[in-house]
Amino acid sequence: MNKGAIGIFDSGIGGLTVFSEIRKKLPNENIIYLGDTKNFPYGNKSKEEIIKFSKENVETLIKKGAKIIVIACGTATSQAIGVLEKEYEIPIIGIIEPTVNYIKTREIKEIGVIATEGTIKNGAWEKQLKNKIDDIKVINKACPMLATIAEEGKAKSEEGKKAIKEYMKPFKKNHTDKIILGCTHYPIYEKLIREELGYDVELINTGITVAEYLEKYLKDNNLENDTPKEKEEIFLTKPEQEFKNIAKNIMKIDIKIQ
Ligand code: DGL
Image 1 (cartoon, protein in one colour):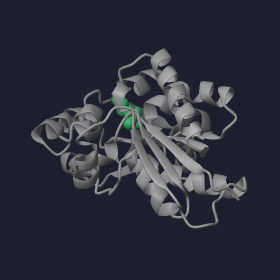
Image 2 (cartoon, protein in one colour):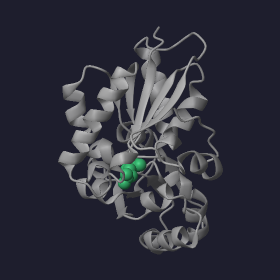
Image 3 (cartoon, helix red, strand yellow):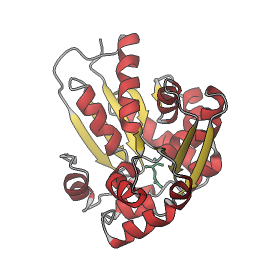
Image 4 (cartoon, protein in one colour):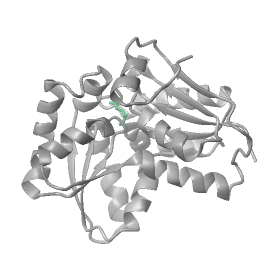
């Protein structure tokens, strides 16, 4: 049993999509969320930079009392998780492994992946999917503008719509009916994606697969908190006026920033 917090980080608001699923699934757990707004966006940065930011985030979360780290960011998972796991003793969970494990439990032979430029270039989703699932076909599409548009609170604007129209082209053409939202900012676009595709599509939200994986991990490793929740803290590396409003009005997540 462990009252330490679940430490979650992302470059900005995107990881709140993971935070909200963890909060729902594990209501007793203390949570500390770190949005690295000072270094946003991660999607166009080099691997070295992502590793440096990720290390700083892990160290901040450990200092603040984390018992486990959740990398609520596809870019940081794809580029830094291996280094972080080697460097720190604290357990670290990214968004790729839990999601690939979930997909493996299903009869899926073809899947789309949308993510940041850095994540798609790195190829981590495709590699892990192909490692674990025989003969799976993966259709990748980098969406360089989506995280920034969401972070600016414009996901539902004309700009958001135009970007989705462009990025959905390969899936629409192919009639892809299962797509991994490989960047944690993307669940914000769920409705627009469905409207643009116009057919029944399953959008895989990594927040849900991560929350399920985390629940099991805490149980198996005797790390659960069996006392009532005491804290839920959100920190940003650079104050952002809009952060709370976007969380509340666009993501429907009510938060208090420290
Ligand atoms: N939410 C992040 C991800 O999952 C980062 C987006 C960005 O900072 O570019 O990739």
